[in-house]
Amino acid sequence: MEHQPTKLEGPTVHPSELSFRKSSYSNPQNCVEVADLPEGAAIRDSKRPEVGPLSFPTIEWRAFLDSVKGEQL
Image (cartoon, rainbow, N blue to C red; front, side, top):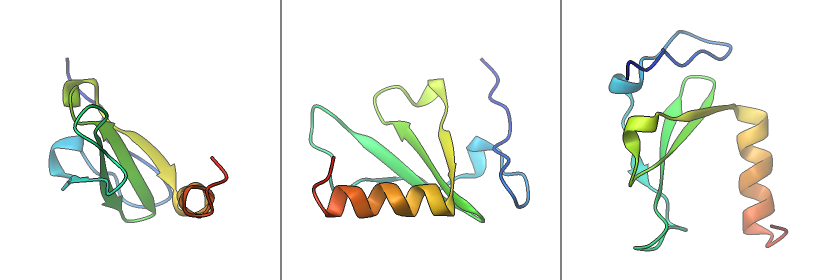
């Protein structure tokens, strides 16, 4: 399956160009990887990277992180 480039409010980034890192909230059974984008973040399931990433604008990603850190989720 060919993945489409990730597009937010900045330059287009192809998924193969992203540098993913494992989330500090992941565990061996549930792994999420995160990559920085020029205008946000991309996440993917490390067990199924072929599915491709989901992209979020900076404001939405920051709100999600604040909710996780505040244990609101």
